[in-house]
Image (cartoon, rainbow, N blue to C red; front, side, top):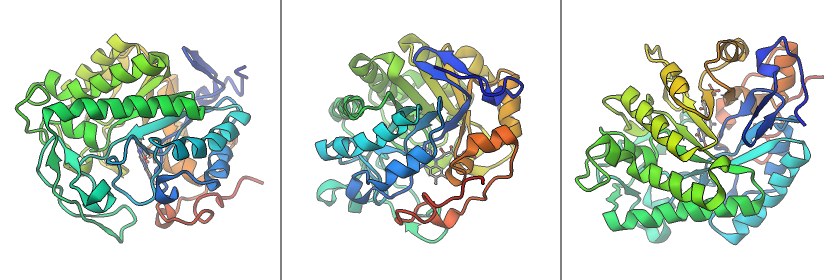
Length: 368
Ligand SMILES: Cc1cc2nc3c(=O)[nH]c(=O)nc-3n(C[C@H](O)[C@H](O)[C@H](O)COP(=O)(O)O)c2cc1C
């Protein structure tokens, strides 16, 4: 049952629609933490996620690999093997025991990878064979060295659609309430969607319709497998992460939400235009309001939100739910702090992606 927290604070009002029966509007954004050794979720994630699971809340997992070719970072979890499914189960159970709804974010990084993370040391796959420029990792120290990708053949694409379908089925078997397809941040699906990267001449390249075909094929396959009411999708049309840029991001965004309406998916989770590179913030003249208006399901926004901005967005009906990333990472009791307007713990970038099972992971303090 959704319980009313504080009707005078829009962030703390209940939200009920489709499969959502939430007590408030504060969502845990997907956050890669690189503590799933050998791509298997670990017992320390039980504490991490249950710390961030308020009653009546909605949580999205860190990006989770759809297959053995999906990885591009050390120790990110997967959901393509039996062992991984079994390892997720106690984590999902712990979140459910706290009374929260839990979706698994499923990704494939495409060319944002190196042969080190690929089976048999093969090249990563993409829409293109154009390589990514080596970049400094988000921790500010390590250099991400990307291997030149191999362009997927047209006949290989249905196999990846099938990988997402199986991963979605596995997520339901692990107990998740649904899945979020990761169509954001320069990973495989964006490498197809955005015209500055996609240089194909087959039915997956060229027109907007062709560039979105892969992602929409996944949406359709996954919705048929587990039900559209258990499917969400994350998009960052205005982002430039992984050199994934589109010449007309607004047109792309509107095309996608209108197409998603046809599948009746539960939600669309869109990253604010002010976020260019995963977390880096810039001024932008764009707004998500046209997409919010066009989309018929639940609209989640994220990127650079703090308490008051979330309140404003809900009060002005610019979104149904707000996903918080870094502030939730550093404040396991974020909801309580928002309710009390209490000060927040600062986040420590240096431990975002380290492998320690406690430090920077489950040791952020709660309010007294
Ligand atoms: C440590 C870290 C890991 C992240 N991992 C993911 C991820 O796995 N999937 C994803 O879609 N976004 C990921 N992001 C982006 C966040 O979900 C979010 O969009 C971003 O932090 C901006 O929101 P914020 O200002 O509330 O932090 C990550 C961000 C951070 C800081």
